[in-house]
Image (cartoon, rainbow, N blue to C red; front, side, top):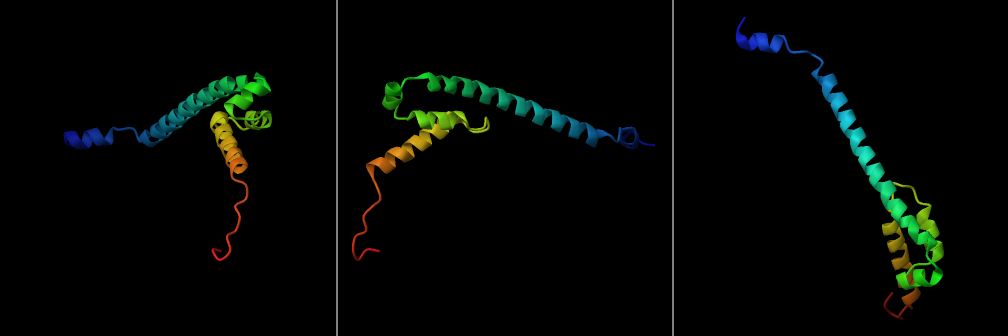
Length: 105
């Protein structure tokens, strides 16, 4: 038996199992880090719930939008979702339904 044959014949056949366990553990750790980061971000966002209406108006959001964003799942960034929702609302307020120009549609 050559050295190369001996090295390959004594290798454990469970290397695939080991890799699967390692990948599973890696995904689990990644999920835990993401979940922890999401919880920290949501805790910081929840401070906006306690702001008064005048301050929320200065920021450019409404209390209803803040309550909506606070109820979103942790997998969604509440601050980003609130920003998008408020931006759409302001765009609709500034530009209501466009008028049809005769001959253009």
